[in-house]
Image (cartoon, rainbow, N blue to C red):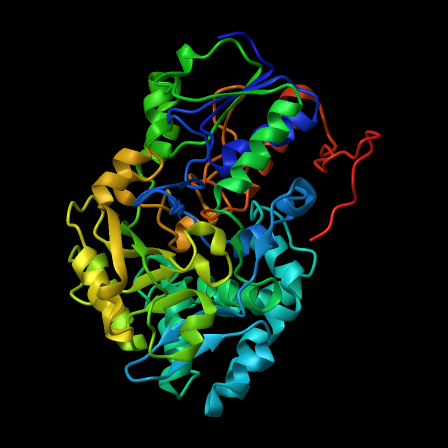
Length: 494
C-alpha cells in the first residue's frame, strides 16, 4: 500500500464523509473497505430477481435531508435526487383506517380528531425550529447549543420515554402513530430517550420529509466515492484491515468501525483504561431483514398506506410496546413491529414496469439466527390481505447473517450500539472528544460515536475535522461544495 496523508478504514457513510472532508482539505486520502463494493449500510443490489433493485440496509433518508454535512456536500448538484412521497409514513390499524404523518404538522393534526391540538403542541415547536434541533441532535453533543432555552424545552420531552409522552394522546390513532416512529430506537418504549427519537424523526417528516433516493441509496455512496477520487483519493475494496500495523504510514487514521473492532485492530497499543471503557460499550437488538420482489403494489386496506413510502406495522401502541419488550427480554415477538419501505410509490426505477420492490425488517434478540420471514409476512397480510399472492421472490437475512455481512452490525445491531440514555451522550466512552483515541493520530468515526446511527455523515465529518485540527493544523472546515466548470464552488442549499 502506498503512503497517504490520511487512511480511512471502512467505507460506510461516515467513513466516506471523513474521506470527503479530508480530501477537500487537499490531503491524499486512501479508503480501505473489506467488502467488494463501498457503502457499508448504504448499498443497493439485486437481492431477489434481475431488475429488482433493493437497498441493502438504509432505505429512507430524513437524516440525509436534514444533515448539515450533506447540505454542504450538495447531493442535488452531484446528480442525486431525493424523492418525497405524499405521505411521509403511515400506520395502519385493524380495519380500513390508518394514521398518517403528512408534510405539515397541521395536516397531520387535522386527521387526528380529538388529538389534533395535542399533536400540534408536541410536534409544532421542533418542526418549526428544525434547523436548531437538527443542528444540536446531529452534533458531538459537547457544546452549548445556539438556542439553549429552545433546546432545553425539546430536551425536557426528548429525555422521557415514549410511553410517558404517549399519555398526552387519547385516540388509538395518535398513540400508534407515535409508537411506530419511536420504535426506531430499537429499545423498550418505556425507556428514557425513546420519546426523543420519536419526536426528532417525526419532526423531520414535517420539516424535510422522509425521502427515498432515486435509483437506490447507493447513489449517495457513489457521489461520495466520486468526490474522493476526483480529489485524488483512492477507495480500495475487497481488502479487510485486521490490524493497524497493516496500514502504510499515514499521519492520520480514521476508523469507521465499532469499539469491538477497534479493540481488535489496536490490541495492546490502547491503554488499559480505554480498553475497559470500550469493552463496556453496549450493543442493542438485531434485525431480521426480508426483501421482496412483487408483481404488483401491496394491497393495503387503508388508503394512506398506498401513498406512503414508509409504513409501520404492529397495531396499537400497546402491541408495539409489548413486541419491543419481548425483544429486549431476549424473546422473538410472535407479532413483531415491522418497518416496511415501498420505494416504488415514488420511484418506479427500482423494478420492472408495474412491479415493485419491498424492504422490510423486524427487531430480534441480538445474534438471532431465526428467520422471521413468516412473522413479517403475517403482519403485512394482516393489514394487506392478498399480499402473499403478489410475491415473486424474497431474500432474507437473519440477525446473525447481518452481522456476518457487515462487521459494524454486531449481533445484527444496525445502530452499531444501543441508543440508550448513557450512550446517547457518552458514545463510545466518557471523553471530551469522542472521536480521538489515546493513540496519536487515530480517530473513531463510526456510528458508535455521536451523533449515532443513520445516514447523515456527521460522525465522519466531525472526526475528520478533529484530525485536521490536531494533526494537520487546519482550523477552518474545508469547502465541500461541488465545483462548476470554471473551478468555483456552487452555493450550498438544503
